[in-house]
Image (cartoon, rainbow, N blue to C red; front, top):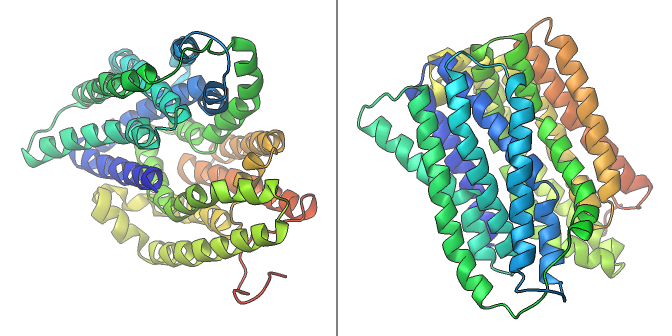
Length: 414
């Protein structure tokens, strides 16, 4: 429950940060900032992808080696090394303005700090410290950055792009000692064990890493394409629409975090009937809430965008409408990808994520040549639609479990 609250709060704080930055930075500066932060998130996710998930079973279940410090150190070294490698490889490929080169160097601090803090958070998760995990995963960073942006806005200050990136990097760097402060007591309480080796880490992590990287392409790569085929203003408009639509995923995210352990338990117990009932009833609740919110956005989109981000963002409405189509499919298919990932279907989920990402990116590249804004929005929606339809069909046909909504609350779903 605490973890669910922390993640929902993290998303709300992130949205608040974007709203404040839209009032502080010019639209092209906001677009560049979206590109920089998008790249940083991708780099950190690639570094953490899979390793964060495998840290839990491998560290918590280890019966070998030196106070798990060896295993924890391995995760941190892998995370930081891969982060730096990704930054070096991809930095020249990101379309940015001239001033963004300096920002990118500063943001490298943010990448390493964020990845390190998240690695520590997942080590804490492996030790069963879920409150500390929820605090340090992203929440503390978003809280610090939100406070800094809110103070700047309240005091009437207008920091430029470079200063905003410095503030971002400092907030991320401050989170590292905070997370270490939570890690030290956890390590002291552990019995002396031999830690983990790199081979099982990589074997367990690889499919999960590919899923994380492919899922990143569901949104972030489309933002990069918008920058490559358009300009930073296009990125700002698409990024604003995307962030509004992501808020609509909050009900699904909250429900998934609540029912994930129940899904795994029911599947292991071979109780497929109550499992399907749980999935379909939760999907119905998600659908009703999400579609109600989407209807309001579809009708009053320009006014809402102008109110949240400023008058210049009303022109993001076409992209918002297209993205809402993809989100509506996401809301009405339930949680098929969650079912796959918690029932030993990680490789199938990986294939679906990769295939959907490739198709969506291809659509963005083709249609983005015609119009970078709505073309990329279509590509992003296609990716979400393809992934969810593949997953829901696999769950229904191959696993015999329906995940889509039902209105039969008084009896078993048909």
